[in-house]
Length: 372
Image (cartoon, rainbow, N blue to C red; front, top):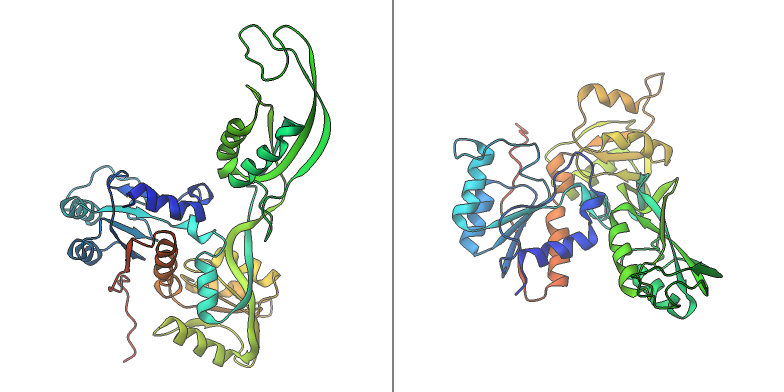
């Protein structure tokens, strides 16, 4: 039976905590990482009803997209909404974890699922993460190069777009003199040594650098292998927020709005746009994604679907003459991210066939739409 840590390791292999936004709080927030788990409940938010559901069904772990412990808290008492949930979890013996912006930024993550739900094809990352890539360089004897190269790839090095295990190699000569106390794999203490070596270079995201270093140390024949890590300019190719793609065929904006409303089960949509325009290229970002509106416009999207757009910020979709530059659609935070429940459940079921994984039967959003 997997443990809480095993279940989270599955999700973190796909959505590493290191790729979360700086402000975010993810991972295990309440509970015991060593506790065995036979059933998991996934939900968008943690609510009293979700905790009660976990207790009733025998789930030992709840995983949500939105974290409960988001802002620092000084206490967790039963007279506080957050503290009451912590107490409720403890009384039920249920562990709790969140997978938030790290899943937003993951390849195949939240916005990819939202795009599929709406019918957007050929999805590409809308706003790739910037400043997160590093180049790791290691020098290794030629007969060990393949083993080290493979170990680096398995640890997450060399992922570029749809390609994995990408690296560059060049041959050269390594020179060193083992000192007193050394136990050299090649050469003798106090004597200069020259070895035919291979220089291996690969790109690595910041959150995988530690794992790659450890993989190199385990696979490398030298006692103290030389490893260089340097920052790279440019954006990541496999991590980022939002998605841009195309519909199967162009359609009028009113038809597109109806498509979004029906696909997401939204009671109503708020939008800026020209009802006479045609929509074919579409950008989406689950949750509060207005900060990527400029990316959607630069990507040539006819429409951008996201959530949490305030009144004054709808004006950002207009040109200086007051005409819509893009159809900006607010479809609701819950509605654009509810698909996350299926996304996480599918990943866990695939990785742990013997684990029971349920999606909550409750709508966790406190908001409703009044249609009269």
